[in-house]
Image (cartoon, rainbow, N blue to C red; front, side, top):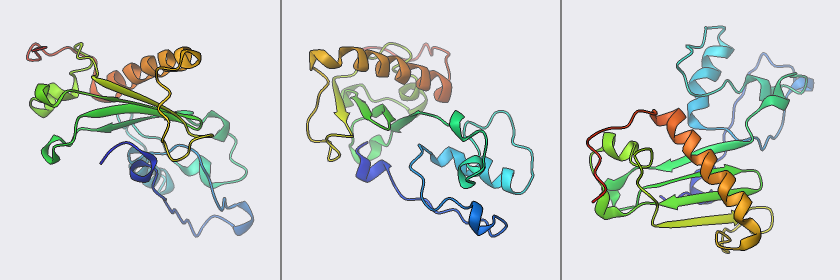
Length: 179
């Protein structure tokens, strides 16, 4: 499974019968993730959401009158750490307009704990991709080396590093070696 939209952009349907028809959102293209499901279920059942949960409740996106929808995420972290299927490790960032993907060397695969923080510990990608999703929805033209996209690439690299630390932790492991 690579990080292209046919693999990562899947439909989600949420139905809350308590939400009046006039207030329901029929379709929404906001950036949501699997980690948002547990907080959503807890929120819909009026159960406190533990602060250590990484996701956000989708409840604000389900109502036309929701006031905090404007504060919804504009970027989402993507990753594939399933090395058992001989895929390369991948991580990236998707916005509504751009997708940035970075791939890591299979020869440097280790245990999951070490691989999950490898980029925090300094492992560099062996290949990168950047796609303009508004003009290339099929993700055909890799624009990562185009000089006019240097600022976008830099921003998405930084955002990727922030997400890795946020979702995987920020502590360096002594067990990672850059062989």
